[in-house]
Length: 296
Image (cartoon, rainbow, N blue to C red; front, side):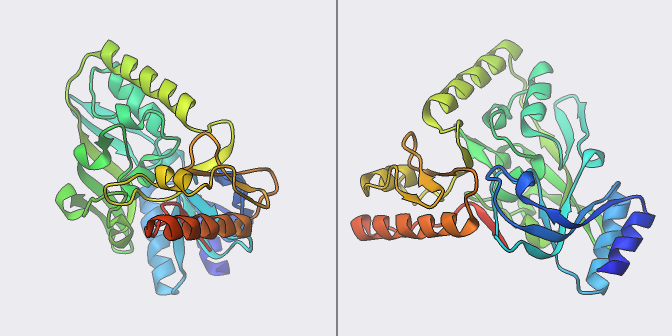
């Protein structure tokens, strides 16, 4: 990886060896990355991907780490994080081109300021557009699939535009990881009343404060929603509220959230996950699937 790091620095990219990853996640858990790479342009991103492919160097992309659990031992390969060069937001009528590193709340507000809807659902999601595209993020009846028309991705061969029809959007799913690294997305946003949009954002923020354990560290909903059911309801019904393993615990406010104290380990979180899954399986014969991504 030394040659990769030297080439990246020569292009003006940021490269950090043995980089702590815990501070880059909402959980604050996990070990370091062998290399943390922050390219300074789409062209440099393509060049780095090409070099990594030629040398058979694995790369994993992260956003703001809001839906991610890092292994205690860290990651022995290259971790990619897009920075300010990938955070631009541009509007042309009802169309928006937004960089993969842009903040979802910022994107939602800028659209609302222009009387454009479609993004209220993500105004309280503390992540980036790239992460939202990867997971087809959704809330309060909205999802990314409703507004995305295409995604520009970087591959070792260059940049290309992928139509939304080829993204295979589903519940908390897309095939973005197979297509490349998201650079930006093109969105089609419906016209809406600005004041109404901000009122909807206010209502959703109040609902989140009331129902979600925002006062604790978490990665959002830990498990995917089983067909026709809600993970939090099943977990609560299985008597798991307040259940604790080490510094990891099931929220008393919303059982769908697995939270953590300072000093909690990845092992604690996974042990709690296993215990919750077992209890739900025993009571309801439902197998919960993790929504949070494990990086190891």
